Amino acid sequence: MAYKLKSPREIELMREAGRLVRQVLDHLAGVAAPGVTTAVLNDEAERMCRQAGAQCLFKGVPGPKGPFPGAICCSINEQVVHGIPGERKIAAGDLVSIDFGVRLHGYCGDAATTLIIGEVGETRRRLVDVTRRMLEVAIEMARPGERWSTIAAAMKRLADEQKFGVVRQFVGHGIGTEMHEDPKVPNYVSRALKAHDIVLTEGLVLAVEPMVNVGTEEVNVLADGWTVVTADGQPSAHFEHMLAITADGVDVLTDGR
Image (tube, rainbow, N blue to C red):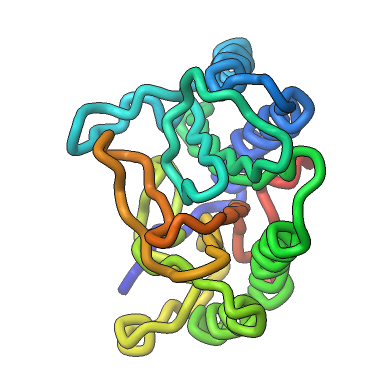
Protein backbone atom coordinates (compact mmCIF):
# COMPACT_ATOMS: atom_id res chain seq x y z
CA MET A 1 0.00 0.00 0.00
CA ALA A 2 1.27 3.48 -0.87
CA TYR A 3 1.13 5.98 1.98
CA LYS A 4 1.22 9.78 1.86
CA LEU A 5 4.85 10.73 2.37
CA LYS A 6 5.66 14.20 3.67
CA SER A 7 8.27 16.60 2.31
CA PRO A 8 10.79 18.28 4.63
CA ARG A 9 8.68 21.45 4.42
CA GLU A 10 5.53 19.57 5.44
CA ILE A 11 7.35 17.89 8.31
CA GLU A 12 8.44 21.27 9.64
CA LEU A 13 4.84 22.51 9.48
CA MET A 14 3.76 19.42 11.38
CA ARG A 15 6.49 20.07 13.95
CA GLU A 16 5.03 23.56 14.46
CA ALA A 17 1.62 22.01 15.12
CA GLY A 18 3.22 19.40 17.36
CA ARG A 19 5.05 22.08 19.32
CA LEU A 20 1.74 23.76 20.14
CA VAL A 21 0.26 20.43 21.23
CA ARG A 22 3.21 19.84 23.55
CA GLN A 23 2.94 23.36 25.02
CA VAL A 24 -0.72 22.73 25.81
CA LEU A 25 -0.10 19.28 27.33
CA ASP A 26 2.74 20.63 29.46
CA HIS A 27 0.53 23.48 30.66
CA LEU A 28 -2.33 21.11 31.52
CA ALA A 29 0.08 18.91 33.47
CA GLY A 30 0.68 21.91 35.72
CA VAL A 31 -3.03 22.72 36.07
CA ALA A 32 -4.27 19.18 36.79
CA ALA A 33 -4.64 18.71 40.55
CA PRO A 34 -7.13 17.34 43.05
CA GLY A 35 -10.37 19.34 42.89
CA VAL A 36 -9.80 20.69 39.36
CA THR A 37 -12.52 19.70 36.89
CA THR A 38 -11.76 18.26 33.49
CA ALA A 39 -13.78 21.16 32.05
CA VAL A 40 -11.13 23.55 33.38
CA LEU A 41 -8.43 21.60 31.53
CA ASN A 42 -10.53 21.70 28.38
CA ASP A 43 -11.07 25.45 28.64
CA GLU A 44 -7.34 26.06 29.07
CA ALA A 45 -6.51 23.93 26.02
CA GLU A 46 -9.11 25.70 23.91
CA ARG A 47 -7.87 29.12 25.03
CA MET A 48 -4.25 28.33 24.12
CA CYS A 49 -5.27 26.82 20.80
CA ARG A 50 -7.36 29.87 19.90
CA GLN A 51 -4.57 32.28 20.92
CA ALA A 52 -2.18 30.44 18.60
CA GLY A 53 -4.58 30.76 15.67
CA ALA A 54 -5.07 27.00 15.49
CA GLN A 55 -8.11 24.74 15.26
CA CYS A 56 -8.85 22.22 18.02
CA LEU A 57 -8.70 18.98 16.05
CA PHE A 58 -11.07 16.86 18.12
CA LYS A 59 -13.90 19.33 18.67
CA GLY A 60 -16.83 18.54 16.42
CA VAL A 61 -15.57 15.19 15.13
CA PRO A 62 -18.72 13.23 14.16
CA GLY A 63 -19.73 10.32 16.37
CA PRO A 64 -22.58 7.85 16.74
CA LYS A 65 -24.36 10.02 19.35
CA GLY A 66 -23.31 13.41 18.01
CA PRO A 67 -20.09 15.37 17.53
CA PHE A 68 -17.32 15.27 20.13
CA PRO A 69 -17.91 18.31 22.35
CA GLY A 70 -14.44 18.88 23.79
CA ALA A 71 -11.10 20.29 22.71
CA ILE A 72 -9.34 17.52 24.66
CA CYS A 73 -10.06 13.90 25.38
CA CYS A 74 -9.67 13.52 29.15
CA SER A 75 -9.85 9.93 30.39
CA ILE A 76 -9.53 9.04 34.08
CA ASN A 77 -8.54 5.68 35.59
CA GLU A 78 -10.60 2.95 33.84
CA GLN A 79 -11.37 5.33 30.96
CA VAL A 80 -9.00 4.43 28.13
CA VAL A 81 -9.57 7.13 25.50
CA HIS A 82 -12.15 9.64 24.24
CA GLY A 83 -13.26 10.78 27.69
CA ILE A 84 -15.51 13.83 27.44
CA PRO A 85 -14.39 16.77 29.61
CA GLY A 86 -16.97 18.04 32.06
CA GLU A 87 -17.66 18.68 35.73
CA ARG A 88 -15.85 15.61 37.07
CA LYS A 89 -13.22 16.64 39.58
CA ILE A 90 -9.76 15.10 39.52
CA ALA A 91 -8.89 13.27 42.73
CA ALA A 92 -5.64 12.29 44.42
CA GLY A 93 -4.52 8.88 43.17
CA ASP A 94 -6.09 9.31 39.73
CA LEU A 95 -4.43 8.51 36.43
CA VAL A 96 -5.48 11.25 34.00
CA SER A 97 -4.87 10.62 30.31
CA ILE A 98 -5.07 13.71 28.10
CA ASP A 99 -5.13 13.49 24.31
CA PHE A 100 -4.97 16.73 22.34
CA GLY A 101 -4.67 17.68 18.70
CA VAL A 102 -4.60 20.83 16.57
CA ARG A 103 -4.61 21.85 12.96
CA LEU A 104 -2.20 24.72 12.31
CA HIS A 105 -1.41 26.13 8.85
CA GLY A 106 -3.29 23.18 7.37
CA TYR A 107 -1.31 20.43 9.15
CA CYS A 108 -2.18 18.33 12.19
CA GLY A 109 -0.43 17.75 15.48
CA ASP A 110 -1.53 15.02 17.89
CA ALA A 111 -0.10 13.70 21.16
CA ALA A 112 -1.18 12.23 24.49
CA THR A 113 0.14 11.78 28.00
CA THR A 114 -0.95 10.13 31.24
CA LEU A 115 -0.55 12.15 34.43
CA ILE A 116 -0.17 10.65 37.90
CA ILE A 117 -2.07 12.78 40.41
CA GLY A 118 -0.50 12.63 43.87
CA GLU A 119 0.46 9.29 45.35
CA VAL A 120 -0.54 6.08 43.59
CA GLY A 121 0.09 2.41 44.20
CA GLU A 122 2.91 0.42 42.67
CA THR A 123 0.72 -1.18 39.99
CA ARG A 124 -0.55 2.14 38.64
CA ARG A 125 2.94 3.59 38.57
CA ARG A 126 4.25 0.51 36.78
CA LEU A 127 1.42 0.75 34.25
CA VAL A 128 2.35 4.34 33.40
CA ASP A 129 6.06 3.53 33.23
CA VAL A 130 5.54 0.52 30.93
CA THR A 131 3.20 2.42 28.58
CA ARG A 132 5.67 5.30 28.32
CA ARG A 133 8.50 2.84 27.75
CA MET A 134 6.58 1.17 24.91
CA LEU A 135 6.49 4.49 23.07
CA GLU A 136 10.19 5.04 23.77
CA VAL A 137 11.00 1.62 22.26
CA ALA A 138 9.10 2.54 19.11
CA ILE A 139 11.13 5.75 18.83
CA GLU A 140 14.42 3.89 19.41
CA MET A 141 13.66 1.23 16.78
CA ALA A 142 12.03 3.33 14.05
CA ARG A 143 14.19 3.82 10.95
CA PRO A 144 13.82 3.43 7.17
CA GLY A 145 13.43 -0.18 6.11
CA GLU A 146 12.28 -1.44 9.51
CA ARG A 147 9.02 -3.36 9.57
CA TRP A 148 6.36 -2.14 11.95
CA SER A 149 5.60 -5.73 13.01
CA THR A 150 9.10 -5.97 14.52
CA ILE A 151 8.57 -2.77 16.50
CA ALA A 152 5.04 -3.70 17.57
CA ALA A 153 6.24 -7.08 18.81
CA ALA A 154 8.92 -5.40 20.95
CA MET A 155 6.36 -2.95 22.34
CA LYS A 156 3.90 -5.68 23.27
CA ARG A 157 6.57 -7.79 24.95
CA LEU A 158 7.00 -5.03 27.53
CA ALA A 159 3.30 -5.19 28.41
CA ASP A 160 3.25 -8.99 28.34
CA GLU A 161 6.10 -9.13 30.85
CA GLN A 162 3.87 -7.29 33.32
CA LYS A 163 0.73 -9.24 32.32
CA PHE A 164 -0.85 -5.97 31.18
CA GLY A 165 -3.39 -5.87 28.35
CA VAL A 166 -2.62 -3.97 25.13
CA VAL A 167 -5.78 -2.43 23.67
CA ARG A 168 -6.53 -3.78 20.20
CA GLN A 169 -9.73 -1.94 19.31
CA PHE A 170 -7.96 1.44 19.04
CA VAL A 171 -4.57 1.95 17.38
CA GLY A 172 -2.24 4.63 16.06
CA HIS A 173 -2.42 6.09 12.58
CA GLY A 174 -0.79 8.02 9.81
CA ILE A 175 -1.26 11.78 10.07
CA GLY A 176 -0.79 14.86 7.89
CA THR A 177 -3.35 17.33 6.60
CA GLU A 178 -5.95 14.99 8.13
CA MET A 179 -5.88 13.57 11.65
CA HIS A 180 -6.35 9.99 10.48
CA GLU A 181 -4.47 8.82 7.41
CA ASP A 182 -3.26 5.38 6.38
CA PRO A 183 -1.68 3.27 7.72
CA LYS A 184 -3.29 2.01 10.91
CA VAL A 185 -0.49 1.51 13.43
CA PRO A 186 -1.18 -1.23 16.01
CA ASN A 187 0.75 -1.74 19.23
CA TYR A 188 0.66 -5.54 18.78
CA VAL A 189 1.19 -8.01 15.93
CA SER A 190 -1.96 -9.29 14.22
CA ARG A 191 -2.58 -11.57 11.28
CA ALA A 192 -3.57 -8.50 9.26
CA LEU A 193 -0.29 -6.73 10.08
CA LYS A 194 1.73 -9.79 9.12
CA ALA A 195 -0.12 -9.98 5.80
CA HIS A 196 0.23 -6.25 5.07
CA ASP A 197 3.22 -5.09 7.08
CA ILE A 198 4.21 -1.43 7.22
CA VAL A 199 7.74 -0.87 5.94
CA LEU A 200 8.95 2.43 7.37
CA THR A 201 9.92 4.87 4.63
CA GLU A 202 11.52 8.31 4.73
CA GLY A 203 8.75 10.92 4.82
CA LEU A 204 6.17 8.71 6.55
CA VAL A 205 4.63 10.40 9.61
CA LEU A 206 2.90 8.24 12.20
CA ALA A 207 0.99 8.97 15.39
CA VAL A 208 2.12 6.11 17.62
CA GLU A 209 -0.04 5.67 20.71
CA PRO A 210 0.15 2.65 23.00
CA MET A 211 -2.92 2.18 25.22
CA VAL A 212 -2.35 -0.34 27.99
CA ASN A 213 -4.64 -1.72 30.68
CA VAL A 214 -3.75 -3.27 34.04
CA GLY A 215 -6.07 -6.19 33.31
CA THR A 216 -7.87 -7.32 30.18
CA GLU A 217 -7.23 -5.80 26.76
CA GLU A 218 -10.99 -5.73 26.20
CA VAL A 219 -12.82 -2.39 26.23
CA ASN A 220 -16.38 -1.09 26.06
CA VAL A 221 -17.88 2.18 24.84
CA LEU A 222 -20.21 3.99 27.26
CA ALA A 223 -23.72 5.18 26.44
CA ASP A 224 -22.40 8.65 25.49
CA GLY A 225 -21.01 7.03 22.33
CA TRP A 226 -17.48 8.25 22.99
CA THR A 227 -15.93 7.25 26.32
CA VAL A 228 -13.97 4.00 26.06
CA VAL A 229 -13.49 2.07 29.33
CA THR A 230 -11.72 -1.13 30.30
CA ALA A 231 -14.09 -4.09 30.37
CA ASP A 232 -12.96 -5.08 33.87
CA GLY A 233 -12.87 -1.58 35.37
CA GLN A 234 -9.11 -1.60 35.94
CA PRO A 235 -6.93 1.43 35.14
CA SER A 236 -5.49 2.29 31.73
CA ALA A 237 -2.65 4.51 30.47
CA HIS A 238 -2.05 6.20 27.13
CA PHE A 239 0.96 7.96 25.57
CA GLU A 240 1.32 9.30 22.03
CA HIS A 241 3.96 11.00 19.91
CA MET A 242 3.99 11.99 16.27
CA LEU A 243 7.02 10.43 14.55
CA ALA A 244 8.52 11.37 11.17
CA ILE A 245 10.74 8.77 9.53
CA THR A 246 13.96 10.42 8.31
CA ALA A 247 16.87 9.26 6.15
CA ASP A 248 18.83 8.16 9.22
CA GLY A 249 16.14 7.33 11.79
CA VAL A 250 13.21 9.13 13.33
CA ASP A 251 12.27 12.68 14.29
CA VAL A 252 9.80 13.22 17.14
CA LEU A 253 7.54 16.11 16.11
CA THR A 254 5.67 16.46 19.41
CA ASP A 255 8.55 16.74 21.88
CA GLY A 256 8.36 20.54 21.99
CA ARG A 257 11.43 21.41 19.95
